[in-house]
Amino acid sequence: ARHCLFTNNENGILTANSNQGDILIEYSEFGYNGYGDGYSHNLYIGHVNKLTFRHNYSHHAKVGHNLKSRAKENYILYNRIMDEQTGNSSRLIDLPNGGYSLVMGNLLMQGELAENNNLVGYGLEGLVNEAPHEFYLINNTMVNKRAASCLFVSVKDGTAVSTISNNIFAGTGEMLSGPVHVNGPNLMLTDIAEVGFVAEEFYDYRLTASSPAIDLGREQPSLMTPDHVYVHVAETEPRPLVGSAIDLGAYEFGEVSEVEAGIAPAN
Image (cartoon, rainbow, N blue to C red; front, side):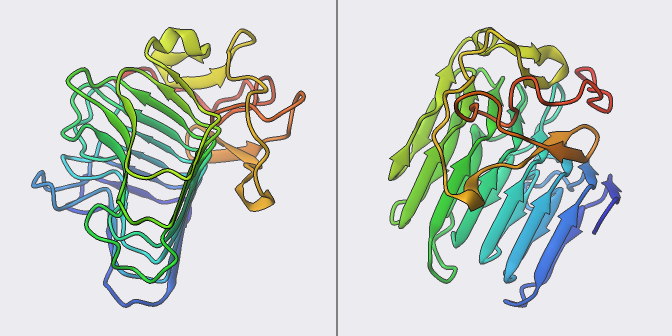
């Protein structure tokens, strides 16, 4: 799917469990999908070989997940996945059966009305996919507005590799539950204002010059070094390296165009 809009369906996309096939979804928007029963979602990818989900906008899933995938391999890159002000989704990203998963360069925001306190879950219904069970969370910007409780990342015990690096965690909550083999550098600040976002109230998570996230990142293998950024709505542009080291989070300071394709006001 490319340049598509999926709104107000029982499931935005629902696939079979063929245990084969590669799925590419890019430059598309998913919103307000789900029956409201918690078993239907903006996207529900079954047991397929590989999912690549990039440059998309997924938001306001109705009780279900904004993205759920049982694929053996998952490449979730440069997306905006959010509840925003009125969304009541469960997880933003749910990868319930493990496998190889790279979650990189995404804007992830859990709203006040979220049904589940966990933004990203990995392997929580059992590591039944084929090995390797490796989870990489790299250069994401993650914001929590849910006051009751928050667990940013939950990883199943028994995961072979769990790497949580170069991320921004903004808002109240616990960073991680489960094993972690590489943790950091990451920036975790309860006061969202201290991160130095351009306009957090409009979901503009680019960095200002005063942000402590600038030049704080660690060099990663080339396939885990972000080379693009998300531009709203469901577009992208390159992310060059600026300064002495990569910045934490989904944006490099000063190198994202002012044409943010219309940052949507809080709704």
